[in-house]
Length: 315
Picture 1 (cartoon, rainbow, N blue to C red):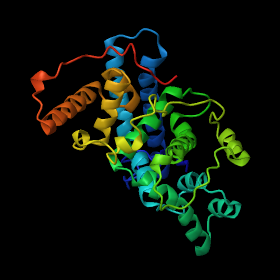
Picture 2 (cartoon, one colour):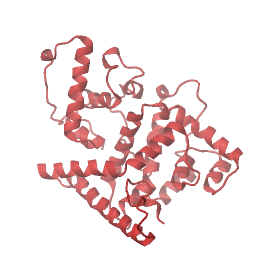
Picture 3 (cartoon, one colour):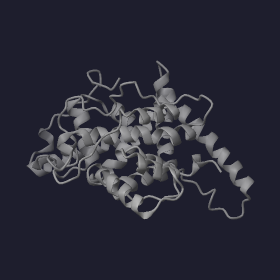
Picture 4 (cartoon, rainbow, N blue to C red):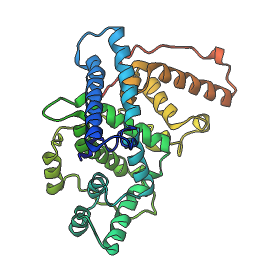
């Protein structure tokens, strides 16, 4: 059975009354529904001129896709936060393998069965990810996963495979690149964690990227901080001032994008796969929280609507 739909929220597999053939047929229907939703989501970005109806349909499609892939996001969130994974799950092992620089341990991850000694060493290696990126707030990690997913939806072109197949192959590579980018930032790594060697430029890893059909030589600045500061530790609340302590990580992200990088609510909603109304409400709630914590009258705060024209967007 193809693994492509293992991570999609669906009740098909739970229906014991269906035969194996009927289950597969139902999954094919789900595949096509997802394909159609992705095309609806992409339309607002692919067409030069779009009307409000197209934008609204795109937002609904994005929300539906996020919901359908909920199992995927929680699977990776749990993996990077706990380091635990099913040794029979090939996708999880392929993801962990990207962080391993020891060839023996790579080979052990490729096998169906490995002895306990190899398993302990693999867990010890991967624990660096758990102790750094995995220590972030779960909401923050899920927001990152949604961002990676949205970026892949925009990149996707039907070329002999389904979107589910594309995600099954590409998602782990783009998430790996995002996590290693975070880990390489000196301020994100605590002094008591073990040394980590990134293998992102390793010939074998690059070969594996290419074999899976993922772009590797293209510079991807989707996750770069345009201003350099505030950094990740400010977003997570570890090093933000008292005025921002009452905000959630996603609210801090929105504040940075809106007030420092001049994004408008629409651009933020596109980047984080959120409805524009949700972005607007989170931003206004954040400002209200800051004002209350500092004893500032909300009426004194001038309301300015960003046009987004001066936004420094990823290329």
